[in-house]
Image 1: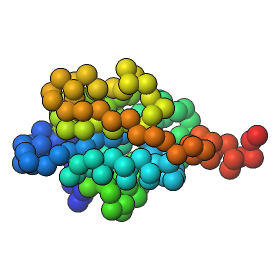
Image 2: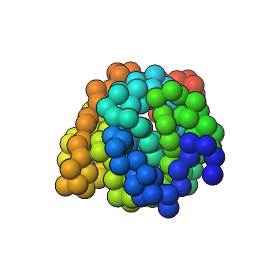
Image 3: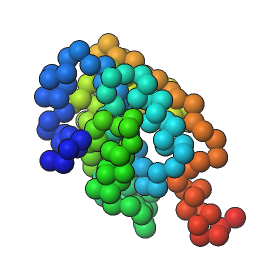
Image 4: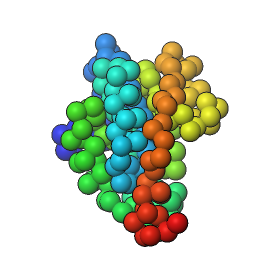
Length: 156
């Protein structure tokens, strides 16, 4: 296991080893890291003592976004994220949603961007019923991986 990368099977033990830490979780593809991602991650980290980022595996990104995504392989996306001061750990999930990961980790705070309606945030009910909270972070307008890819292609 690389430093900073948590395997799913180790998430529950990680939680138990850190009972006094407020663990924050967010997730995404993070295919091309941009300002909007970094702003969300910094805000998420400010809400607790430790930020764990769930990253979609390459296969999961391909199912969700279609070919040729991802443009950056999962190990490289994890490496880049772990170089950010605000990210403490990365974990991968291969499902279309991070629900199983959230249930294993049991974060104190679940963070998503405000483009998600509260009722659409995967794992929100589980986190809240376990005593945690869900925070919707205001997104920085004008930044998205899909928009960046379109601009690179010269699409209008």
